Length: 154
Length: 108
Image 1: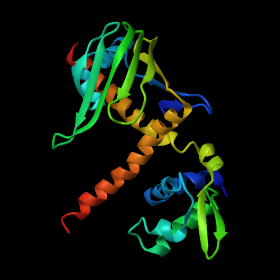
Image 2 (image 1 turned 45 degrees about the vertical axis):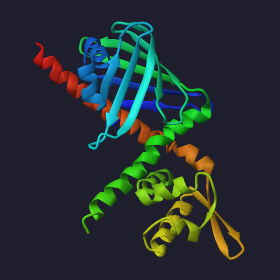
Image 3 (image 1 turned 120 degrees about the vertical axis):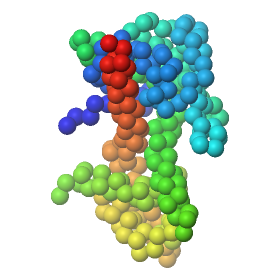
Image 4 (image 1 turned 90 degrees about the vertical axis):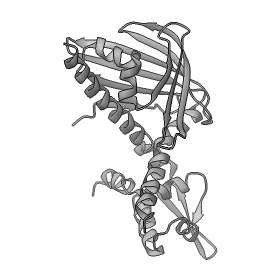
C-alpha cells in the first residue's frame, strides 16, 4: 500500500516537500491548523500564542511530566488565506537550527477530501539534512531512554 | 537475493542504526564501536558483519585493527534519514484526521 504521507528531499536542494491527502473537507483541515485547541490535540504541543493574521506571531511548547521544556518553537505568519494558504517562518528555540520558511498549501480535492502540501525552505542543504537526521537520532535516544526506564527498578 | 530489502532489514535494528550514527562523522575500529554498547562484543561483530554484507559499511585494515566506515553513497540511496522523519509526520497527520473527524461529528 502506498503511504499516505510522502516526503521528498531532492539531492542538493535546501528544501523538504511533505504531501498528504486527508479524508476531510478542506475547511476542517484548515481549522486543524488555526484553532489552538485543535492544534494541541494532534501536534501534542501547547499553543502559547497564535495570531492568525499577516505579521502575526505564534509560539508552541512541549513539556515533559516534570515541567522541563522539551520543545519550544516560534515564528511569524507572513501571509494567511482562509482554506488556502499559510506562509510562515519557523524556528526551534535553542536547538541550533536557523529559521526556516514554510509554505502550507491547502486544496480541496472533493467534498470530503483535501490535500496539504508543505514546502519547507532551509538556510542551507546542510541545515536541511541535519533536520532530517533529527528523528533518526531521537529514535535511537528514545530506544535508549525506554531501555533505561525498564532497567531502572532492577 | 533482494539486496534492497536486506538494507531495510539491516537498518530496522536499533543497535545497527546506532552504529551507523556513530560512524556518521568518523571511521572507527571494531573495538571502539563495541565500547559504545553494553552488548557482548561478538553481538556487535555480528551487526557489523550484516551492515558490511549489505554494503552500508566498508572495512579497511589499519595495522592490527579493522576500521569501519560509512558507505555514504549507499546511505543516500536508501534515503535512510527520510523514513523516520516521514513516519513522524504520518503519525501526526493520522492523529489530525482522527481529531478532526471527532470535531466534525461533535459539531454537526
